[in-house]
Length: 351
Image (tube, rainbow, N blue to C red):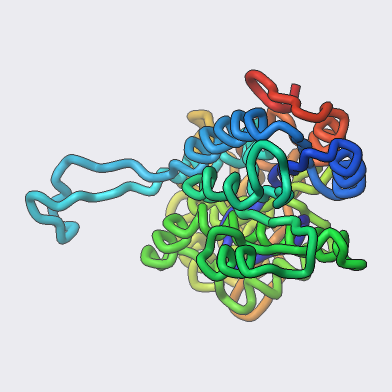
């Protein structure tokens, strides 16, 4: 479920998958195999599975709450009395990137159709409003009820346990559905960023740039931070880089700002000539130090793709502190692999 950049998804990180099957031997075997690449929890009890999903849904609802209703009248913004305005809370995106519970969201549920307490389709119907993606395991290649459920959108995929390539298909489906889950959850944010016009998420050169960076630094997570105009990147072991992105026009304007504040200097000339890229001088760095006193921390040598300039910045050079609670997807995945069947944790699932 780890992949490179997807322009329709401004924030991406792995999540947990949930398996539900009354055959605990089969369940343990499937959990062990899938757990080599994904974080997987296994359940033979539908009740325990529902408790786990309910907690995961609460985390997801809180995590993706990046908007706030703005009740004051905004004069000059085209708003009239009675209009409802929404603010995109950019600070929440940075908080999301630092969240220790981000992996605990459940994006994909894999459920057996034939179980004594409830059928797989009944279980999928019970969780239909949670927004998770579902894969139904059937005993045969297809049946009318399964096909009808798929056509009606009750389930997202189905695969027969008797299919000789069932495991490969499940793995591929998990990756596809996780991306769909993230795209669904982030659709309001994506629309807001596109309407604002203050981003370069879906530009062809941005897509190519992020793919190239993935070859240099194989990130498993990325977070677009609008204020900072770039992506915080993290690999499976928790190592961090920041890809700072700007365009030639913006950087020339930044050079003018620098010259106005401190006079002509190497930084102002480098920005105007496309040799340097600068952090947003008006970003929140968590202290009161004026930006013009810290140019050495905010301006970096860069490369150019089209009219974009970019620099890959190590985490220790970031002007803000990350304070990540649990940085490693690898360690989280291993802990989930060790959880027993029907585990229902209290508090943080990383314990």
